[in-house]
Image 1 (cartoon, rainbow, N blue to C red):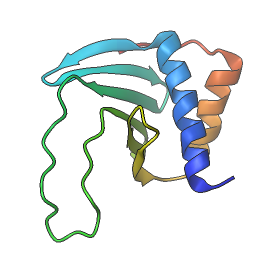
Image 2: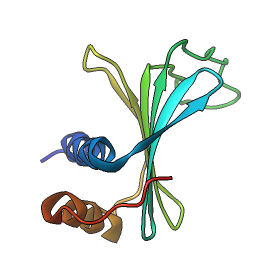
Image 3: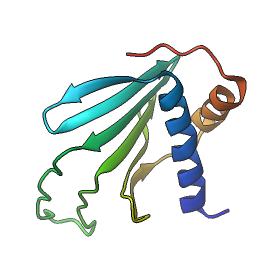
Length: 116
């Protein structure tokens, strides 16, 4: 399995957890769906209006502004990505670790969640 395939699999697991127990929070340009569980914090962003894409400042990374985003924190940011309905995906950060097993356990076990 490629790294991108693994990240898509993790995204889909996180979205299942969010769908089951997440709570929506309005933000200035859309909304985000949040779940806290132990050390895991999962946030899904959905923009009604995409934020402007700033020109990169001395970086080789191309800035993206896609309509959906996912952030996962586990003692720090471990996953951040964006995607759209056309299967474009932009991975901004990925740090493999024990949090992946914790996310899998949440999905498989149907653990109790605490919404934010």
